[in-house]
Amino acid sequence: MSDTFEYRHKPKRPVVWLAAAMAVAIAVMVVALDLQQLIWLSVLFIAITVGWLMPRRPVYGIKLDGDHLTLAAWRKPRPVPLDRIAYLQAAETSDEISYVIVYRDGEQEGVFPLDLPDDDTLVEVMAERGIPVRGPL
Image 1 (tube, helix red, strand yellow):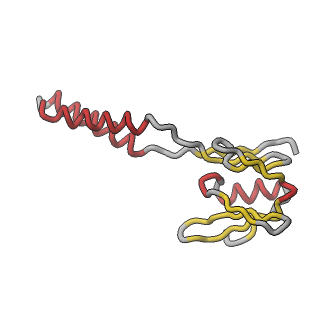
Image 2 (cartoon, helix red, strand yellow):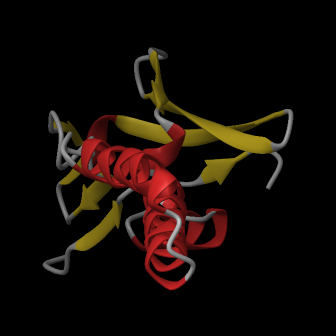
Image 3 (cartoon, one colour):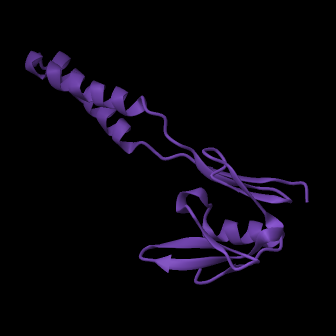
């Protein structure tokens, strides 16, 4: 199988948008209502926005080709040969489902939840490569 499945997930930044909106709203108030004492508050929200944008946010995801399942594909790639994988075991923990790779030799390895696509997509792409996904879905 030559086609490659890639799933990338980059965390969203709602705090940045909220701080930016607050900075704009306060700047409008300073200009429109001549409230010079609020300038420091506008500067604070702009600083929060810039400070939040500075650090790099990791990209989570997997890459799946005909031979390997690459975990943490865009951070610290760990290729796992597909012929070593017996199945993926799903386990329901509170509100979400977590997955464990069960190898043919009985060894198990947990998978970081943000690395995986939604359940239906995961089941479909693994089934295309002959790897069953077991457990509560």
